[in-house]
Length: 230
Image (cartoon, rainbow, N blue to C red; front, side, top):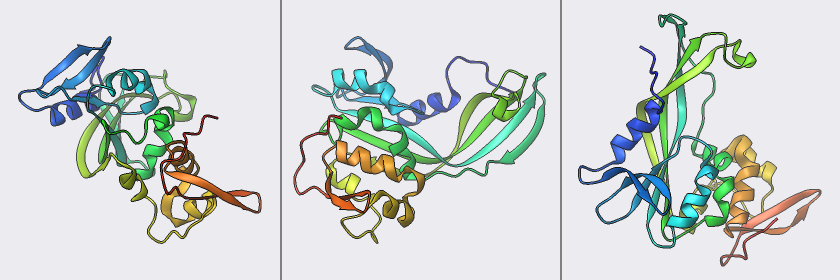
């Protein structure tokens, strides 16, 4: 049966998973509604895409509270398509697969907040079930099929990004420095390499180290560099 709730099944499942028995859900704080507030006052936010949407909320909360952002990344996606009457039409695996580096495509809007003593981003590498409906109302790329909801199937691994070292640990071990975005891409980061380099430079974790031809070179910053403002 296709979900018709206004709230995402995936969002609700993750909220239930990371909410302790003593925690409260949907709590107003600093002019915003927080997904989960723990007994110690720390906050858990579930964000299934576009982490930049949390920018204003995080700017208000981080000076006084510890915040953990839960961000699911689909390592594998199973797609179930239903007819307009709600009957299962097809079930298949998506050819798209993602890794931890997907987070850098979604995190650009809060790069200026990284790293922060009160902020942890927990990337949940998961298998996701995507529910679709053949109703003629969806994107032309999907031939009019609408995405109705997403649901958690299983979790493969969690990555906890909190301090400078956590982000540096995501650089491929085989990577020599300085390096270009193209070299970072070829070492396994893939198409997210450009966003990763930009985010880590914005956060003062990487810094420029000259150029190689027309390409910028990056290296680990010895100390937290002055945030990049452009």
